[in-house]
Image 1 (tube, one colour):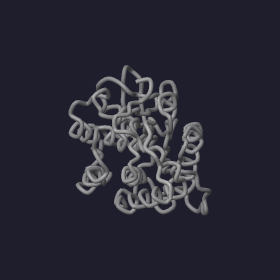
Image 2 (cartoon, one colour):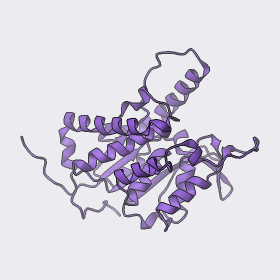
Image 3 (tube, rainbow, N blue to C red):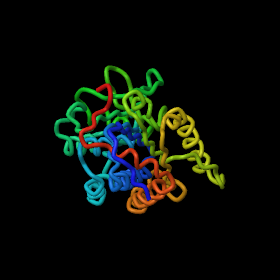
Length: 278
């Protein structure tokens, strides 16, 4: 069997939003790293922004899973500080998420990350998605990217309100295209036609996922490889208790994907490779 040769290609990785289903991203990363595929540039939305930023900061998948087991990325109650006032923009503040990112990344600065990171947020004043990639306030932008509407308060920056990047772009591969030779996309919320519509929550879930799929199409089209872990078939975005099963699904399905698409192994990058144009 012919062995894939190491190249100096710049590999980008785009991680979608998906709430708890985003734990699959950690399994995907584990499988890629085991095959010596080490993306140098990351883009992410919501949970993809959280996992992507931790990876860009140098944390490996076992370290991320240990954080999950410590409840720091496990239960909703650990990620939220509930507000009693219903007239606020969300039930929860950003303090817990921001404090976690600052604990893991004390410098709180995009430029000091070992890997380039693009964080996608939704500007509710312009109703356009934006990419944040430079300066300080890394923790605030990651938190804003993961601000689920109605659950978290909107972030306010220069008078503009920012919410979850997945509202307008759930797979933000666009900033990777100019600087990467190949892009691996991981969409943990691929659209799956509904098999039931018995309860209001079924209609709500199907609608939200359908909208997110539509706003992901542009990003999906830019990916040279697209991995779609099927955890969404069994779990919803708030099943933080199923983190281990969701992680294993991401890992196993990436292993299967690599077997079916062996040419992805040509993306084994030299350690010193830098993004083109940076």
